[in-house]
Image (cartoon, rainbow over all chains, first blue to last red; front, side, top):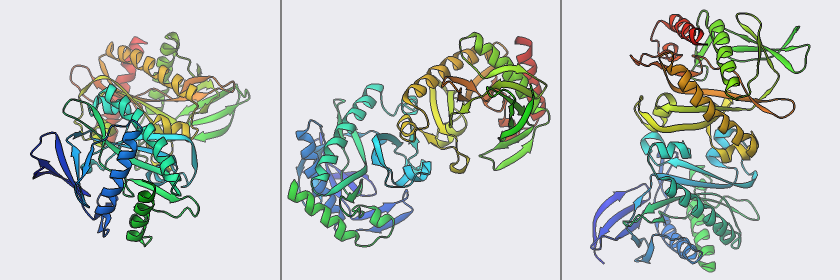
Length: 237
Length: 237
């Protein structure tokens, strides 16, 4: 597999073409950003943690019936994935109130929700990734009605499986963000990553934050926490 | 009917108790605000225009099967209405892109939508009336699932009837906001007002703005426009 030109550089990853038009190579960076890019930094070792962790979780989800972009891990930071066009939507599922939900609606953090909340953001840095509803998504033609239903169905299944997976390694899944992509044949599959960058994970016993909030909120022990989460995931995975 | 103590003062209206616990009196003000209260002013005669116009439209909607709070107009600015507890939700329906939708999602104004967009805002001045989705509404217990479905069903019917009503008097209904209330027996009815304060109305021929955007955007002829809209509504109503 030949790594060819870079086709996209995001805040945490680079994506490269390969000599097979159906495959991309994802290269994870240590760069960390928060608050729509206003806060910038580095978390040493993060790229490797997120790559390895996402790959373990994607393989677990494949076994549960969720199609993902994962093909093969190439190195500590590089993974071969199915080539997709990312839908310009972030899907957020919340099990416990926190973060932007708490801020936007004036609700304290840590309230366990009777049932999960699903929300969409429009992936658009210039606009600040605004909250968006189903009617808006269809009007802006960001996805078709069928794609939207599939994305929601997959997201709830992912939540059920992730909640269980993390609880078994002593972590509460507070909320998380996923992105989906469309294959050349139109099929929707899970893409991007699942990592401490994209999940809020609280220690099941101490409620200690074990995710990117340590970076966002300057809580210290950022690198150690990422390594600790990976180590728990690897023991289970 | 005796007008007793004021129970609520909003930006554009005061609400008073009466000696019948099932009835309130609404008193319309000339005060105008925009941008979540950041811009303040007066539109001379607005209170009377909005009162009379809302009453004509509410009676039209009653005939179309929409239950409303309207009981009887008491004076130029005062109306007797059914006592309700207002649901803390603004229901916005959009037929043409404009205003906060265009700003939030980076879309030019004036694009006719293939089908109406329905969106909710959480009525909360401190939080800036943020956009909210169905899952959020249920999690925050702002309405039950049944109430939410009823509110949506009514809103689409209101849109169909308002579009037709306004077109017959040479006005395009770009978007509008409505609020619903809960009667003591739990029944959901249309409350608040329908007026140039709460609708975007563009002249069907010239596309001239015939609504509160003249105040928001300092377009001049504010009072004259409110009077012109009322006069067209009265001719038809």
